[in-house]
Length: 294
Image 1: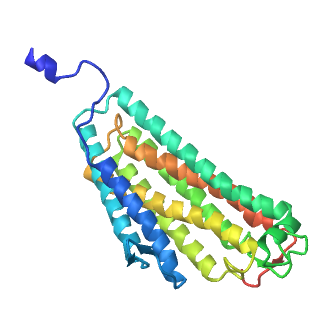
Image 2: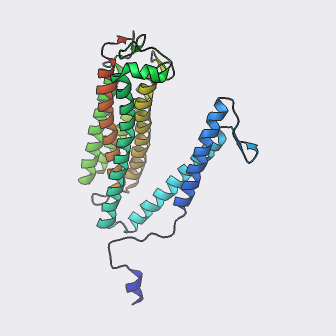
Image 3: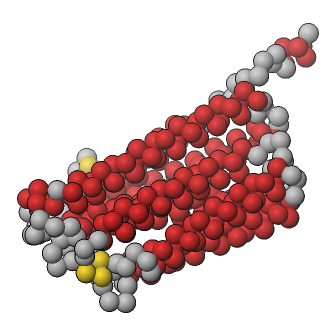
């Protein structure tokens, strides 16, 4: 009878009391307040709370450290639960639903940046009136703006991401067929391609003929491509963790949601880049002056 009470007779997993939601919320609050304090510090202002001026960057990094620690601890607990057999088919399905909803929220996040870009590019006259800092000449790209050659570094990065999508799919199929060597090799190549993409984009940013603050073109360009670059960085770390876990033997052909979620996220990053390349780099630069050497 005691054994019957100890083992639940259903497919759901009632988790033990966890500190992570509360700790993560506290970390996020500290990071948000710290972000405001950092911005005040950068512009030379004050940010007093209870009579204490906290205008400095350190509060932000304290909050970030708490959030990162929460992520590590929470996901470690999730992995432990999977190893203990708590991730039944129903629980695994709900984990997938959660990842799908997360990616859907990310889609809407990028919709906002595409909206801002197309609003400015399709109505350049109105954009100039709103910005009050430039004269677009009623054209896009704005007058006086030199643009990047879309078929130079941007095309190179497009090929890199498409190749990385192929290698992560190879790794997934290798895992399904219990090919541990193929899984590890595919992940190594994917992580390497992700790092290469970030390096190329950093080089492109350093040599861009326009800046974030000199025009609405630069603002919309860097916000959209910059946030995508951040997602590539996060996805690369995600896949690197999966690589370390794969080398440790964590994943099985039957149970590998952690890797599957990383692969979904990486494919999402790939697709967003294709839209960025086609709209911002190619279409958005039509009629503009290509910067020499870019």
